[in-house]
Length: 73
Image 1: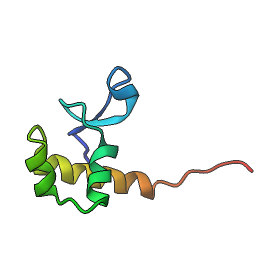
Image 2: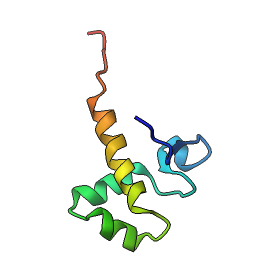
Image 3: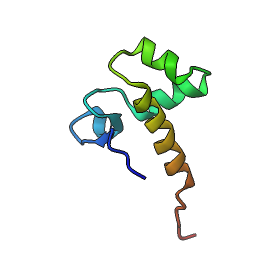
């Protein structure tokens, strides 16, 4: 999967994943979506985001959730 609009920079938002060129975190976008906002509504409220940015945040969140993490017990 290509996440070319998602960046992680330790100097921006404490290294949280953000939409490239913004200080808007993927976490924030996902929370908006979880509260029922559509990609169109988010892009309208935050004009620095494109609908494709919102869609990529959703895809990134889905990708992270599908990763398996092994731990020693």
